[in-house]
Image (tube, rainbow, N blue to C red; front, side, top):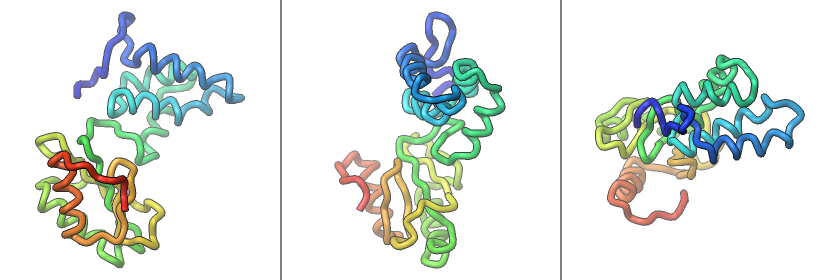
Length: 175
């Protein structure tokens, strides 16, 4: 994707539909700033990531400083500040997952996909990330792929899931 997700007639990056959805949320909150998380989610769902120009426009809509939008988008791992693959694979490496093989899963994925954490495969299919916790300790080691949980993973089980996704095979969400 390019830096400009989709320009409106006025040069804006955020579409009129997304802008309207954000503005419809404003009356539900006491302060405009409180709409920041859902606004970023709306914009990201439209373009697949958060271009800097789109974040500036969110700041304008919510009448806050652009740095406040940047801070929020940087803090939450669910927001992408650069283009990502069709499948975003978050491998948990927090304590429970670390002790049960989270780092080994990440290394296996790096070898299979030939990318490092934070990178996207050349074909644009997979982005690999190591994350601190996805709150599924009882099913460790675990990963989240496009916000669907996959627990009690092994290298082979994860590879089957990735191969199925790459081939377009239908998969139920998580396990």
